[in-house]
Image 1 (cartoon, rainbow, N blue to C red):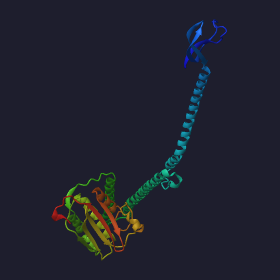
Image 2: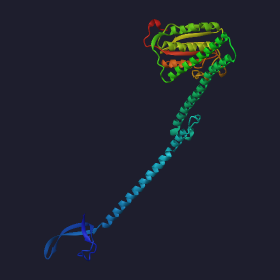
Image 3: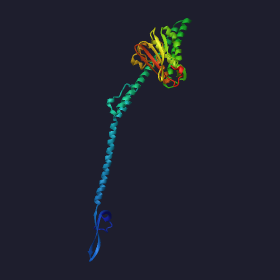
Image 4: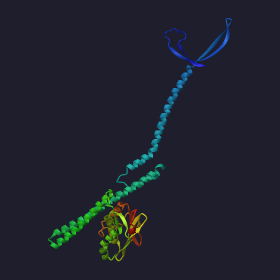
Length: 370
């Protein structure tokens, strides 16, 4: 059996009518052959039986169109459902994004709530809160720093204005005018040193602090600082002790001398009279440690991590005591970090120890090792 296409007319009664519309019919034909006696003779014959299948074809064509339409509708519904699902899935992320947009320099204390987001975003929110906490701390320190430096500069300027006004209020002798000028010179020197220190720290902040690296004896540089502070120590009845053999390091000797100067002057400032300050050099596997230890009131543990911040003081009531500007330890930290070293502080009831660690040279001269 096979399908064949035959042309038929719409009106079988009038096949010769030229006005009749021709159409194509599809038939399924079954052919069978055999022999039969016709007019006294045995004849071979082929019998063809045909059945029109146009109805079935029309049905299949309509079904195909319906299936295509249904597939298109289902596809559109799937796309719509996926879009809604994705939008709903991104809703927590958009909420987090909107919350982050609302955080400005005016409300850095705002935090996101990890329990109100899906577990997939919980670690992200925790990390963001940690980051914003650091930013808040930096902003707070910057604000305090600006206020402190304004106060530090205002103090000598106020002193200069006051001294000048007093000197001009009435006639003064030459001796009195000289005293005013000497006092003004001290204030000018104080301001000059402060500006110089601030420029030094600004260079460190912008990675422009480049040490002039040479090999030098760390012990010899420390001894030079010792000689400089001997008079001050004797005046306060404080003993300076040093332990350590000569050791060779690489770096900028002037910067190391400045760092040692700041640490030793800080120790002298807070050491009670009649006590002793001990400076020693210890050999570690990768570093030489310069340890400056002085007795005195212990520093609370919560303040240790911030001692190297600019203008930070453990006791605000002692802010104006002494000649310290409040940035000496910050300079020490900048110098040590520029030499790829580290500085730390330890404090207990007996003493306070500042430990300045300097990287060792790979090849040391035997007689100069500590």
